[in-house]
Length: 435
Ligand code: SF4
Ligand code: SF4
Image 1: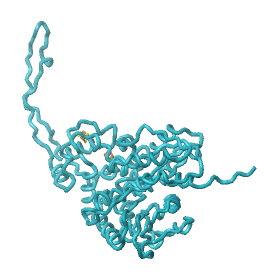
Image 2: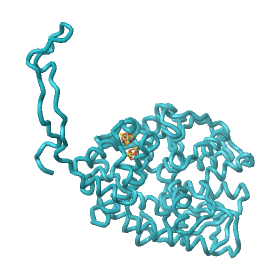
Image 3: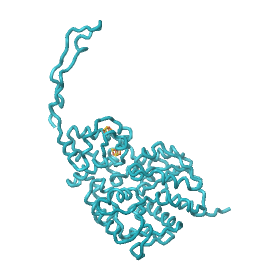
């Protein structure tokens, strides 16, 4: 950019003596300017971004500021969608700007934006260019490499994808070994398969499906990451590779419905796999179980104060708010309390859009993690006497929120549970007490 002023004031018009209706407006009090001419306006960055497939809507921002109070990252840093627009107007194409990686693609600004400026499309479009130029934060690059090599962001062996099932207490059939069609192909997903807390949810899900008599099976080692977070983080080619592998696996078997644990997988299969050739029916597990809730045989009363965190990619970005609440309301003894940010205005946990693999990088640019803010809100809602639960329906969240419970000093004051864990718990008999 040149040092010249962007806006040139051509001439100042001013009457030395002026009195109107007895009021003296001499000199600068009547000062006016001739028409200002814009002498220099760097349009290259805006032209480049809006020329990208997905970047078009950035040009439509008219600085109304409606997005400012709803962007979660703006609450904890100097980032915000309106500020991004100003940066680009000033000639910054964002490729080398940390802001490029702060947006979690939570969609809350898009929800309120009168001009439909859409970071869910803008950010992946610019990030894709950063990926092509090799300008990716190290931890994200590592997750991409793991996804490329092993089909999961943790870099674990695909053969270990089903290890959790050994301790489920019920059989977990592999569809490749069954040799027949099933009603439900359960897509387990990465964090549910490999993360210790995710595995707890997987085992709970296996027990609940079995108790309900659902005819289900899993892909096991044939399953790959759904790829949606890689797509939102700018690795379009990797997303397409993973989708191709999953679609190939889906095509080998006959099943009526796909049921997923992960809202990001739900988003991918529902909204992005169809253009790549897969068009089956997909349900989030809370939607599937909500259909069967009347058949659940409850055996315990939990007596818990529970609040629910709407995952961005189940709630706001896919419109499902009721199924998780229907399940929670059905669990004996659960009292559901809403946090101030709920449903369409739910607060992002920070894990979306690649945020799951950018924690270290993001921490350098924010005053507090989004997960920590959310935990504080949960604690304020359900209290600190130990009976409070922050319930979730996304495998990214137990680990994020449990870390945040510790870092905010709330260990022992609130617990984090996937809804499936609460259902499983209430379907078990209460442990016998000793006199
Ligand atoms: S709500 Fe939309 S138009 Fe208004 S400042 Fe934010 S991005 Fe721009
Ligand atoms: S999508 Fe979410 S995190 Fe990204 S700019 Fe909009 S409100 Fe902020």
